[in-house]
Image: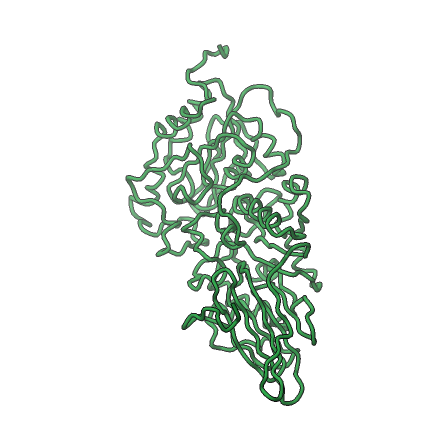
Length: 495
């Protein structure tokens, strides 16, 4: 099949190839691109710092590339990414020019989409650039020009791309001078995660490993510094780097391809994600972005020590969250659960970062009766506590994902998110008889800055009913369904 035989889609959004100077890459894109694509390409291509900050500021209003973005004292919770400055510092820029050298001064790569640069041709000659998606048989761009310029696709997620550059001679005849199909085997590839997201990153790393294996590439994974110790020894064939530091180094990279994983709101054109993350799950979205099997796989984790922290049998709980809608808002729920677990002879260990967390007049305390192991502890220490626990009881939070990776039964209590949002667990506690799942409802845009966010019932008696209506009996029945859980209370001597 020749390039002329490829399917062309009417109205398919594409970037026009322009003929501006090499030093002003920002003007290489036609203003017919959608607003989102214009903003993203400015971030990628503009060279002036003031312009970059303006582009990022505009982007910040349109996209939230993560649930959270604040890293705190070695233990990360999902916090809002409010600071445009932080976003600028943490966003890893692609190389200003394509990194791969073709013939006749042509440059190309697969960073930030499929990208091509063509130099100024001789007088009377020109170029024809064709960019294709081989899997869908769609021509993304087919453009001629008579000057130097750049071309890139609007889509930034993985595509099995093909690049054809033809030289147009003075007599009008065309000669193919570069034909390249995507092949990352043995090449340097970058995958970047947003800094500050614990649960999401735990779910995404296995997909990065799937990508590395599928393409047999040399993978660099940029993510939060506090997560590197969790993964570095477990995934020795991946190079892990601190995304915050790496983004500020301002060094020219030579990556053949680069991909950005995140939770992208208002991505109506699906330029960043082939499918909206709210419809496929927090972790599975990475599989779609990277073009690998979206079937979930628990992450491999490293513990600080491979020994039990205490000799007695114990259960780990985590009760804190970043916004009130993620809490178990049954005011007596945790007290009943702790009493129940202790009646079975378990010690109950709380490993939240914060003993008390909240905002304004709403504050959430560590439940009475739980043993306090809160604080800014290394995540590898948390893995040790989880690894030897009988099971974990918590919310839809990063520590639940950590427990999943530690390989123990995980009880997740949540009404704000639908069960497909998290990893699969047979011990999911969810009440379908009340309002639920607003996180997954694409009609509502999650407000990271509103601690009391409840889009349907704010300031009413029904606020947070999704978890207020989850009874302690419901949770206890779920706990008792764990095969290894003790079924009968023990006496004071533990017999």
